[in-house]
Length: 165
Ligand SMILES: CC(C)(COP(=O)(O)OP(=O)(O)OC[C@H]1O[C@@H](n2cnc3c(N)ncnc32)[C@H](O)[C@@H]1OP(=O)(O)O)[C@@H](O)C(=O)NCCC(=O)NCCSC(=O)Cc1ccccc1
Image: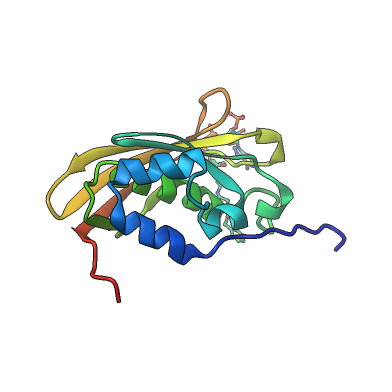
């Protein structure tokens, strides 16, 4: 032991409420600008939303030891957190106010290992197809030289924002 990390986060209810009241692109732009609290998972894994435009979202993470699995590289689940976020938010960026989404699946291809030597990585999510009830998105995880580290596809379900309970 000897290595420690502490972090704080905000009440996630504030964010969920705002998501229900705003168009997807406005919500994500506000989140990106710091006008809304970052989601708790962003603090836990320490990754950030860098760019968002309709149909595209980019997240970044600088790998640290705290992301490691027992075999000396970044855990596959960390790849998945970035890819799920990028693909999902790409879909969210296309939704009008009153529509919500959730990812139904995530198919990940791990192409290269990530270590602390890899440096900052970026997950770039884009929408491939959007219907009335589902959307298909993809995400590419790349290093600073745009070398492909992983790829994912994700189906998302689209539905009206549920009434507040
Ligand atoms: C190595 C391979 C699987 C296959 O590569 P191929 O398709 O045949 O392609 P290619 O030969 O072009 O090599 C590509 C690059 O790989 C390098 N390389 C090759 N062989 C080795 C080697 N033996 N060892 C190290 N590196 C090797 C090679 O030099 C090249 O890099 P370079 O261009 O020289 O810089 C690759 O796709 C990969 O690393 N994927 C990421 C997997 C990953 O990170 N998964 C998630 C973490 S696992 C987890 O968390 C689960 C868990 C949880 C809990 C507990 C335990 C576990």
